[in-house]
Length: 315
Image (cartoon, rainbow, N blue to C red; front, side, top):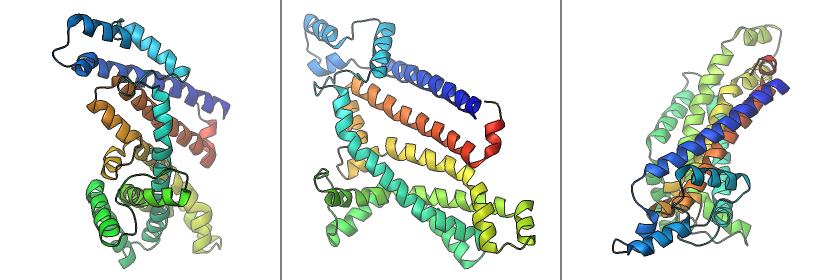
């Protein structure tokens, strides 16, 4: 197990370093100068040069990359060109919306997908299986932003059960959760559909294994065989999807946050791209990529806990 964890840690560090380099290089080759964007096309050369020096854009690319990288290690993400405040403050303000939203959506997705996938697998080719697979196909096909607008029209405009957008803050937790409910449902639907199909497929593969038939032959009931043997072994591919879904829900909710006017990380990145605030884009994207890599690392560790055979394999 220690050797396995050491190998995963080395992979984690290498992935983070490679991701930081790719993000920096991509934003370096993006056309447009943030200083010229802020001053306009009629800016005087000396004024432009002074602003570039103030923003640190006149330094060599390698120097700026190393400075930015070391700043990330110390929690210093730089100063926003647009807001004139530390990027870390912007991230801390927005993360308390994006993170609960992602967790809320993932919880809904899991609560829907696990029972649906298990029911479909244990009742293969039955009306229940056909119904579940039909609904999941519909859930995968529906764009989540279109589904989000339907939710707004039904529950906010017509029924008036929820607000159409905005976030009231966490002073009243119930009101905050209520504001996140429709966005979480809109995000959870396609993810629950994907997870249900993966759960069904994994369960079908596991139920056809010899050790499942042996357990039944030894006298275990169908329910005992399902929960003690089949489900645990079927969780390995499902855990991969759950980890990837959390990363997607945290990093990929830009459209949903804009539909519901939620001031989260996704909306922050969208606004920073519009304003050419590249230091915000760089730092927030790096943070989101780091979250994806970290979740993948945790999934790998969970693999080792679920399947002891991985603890004995070399990294």
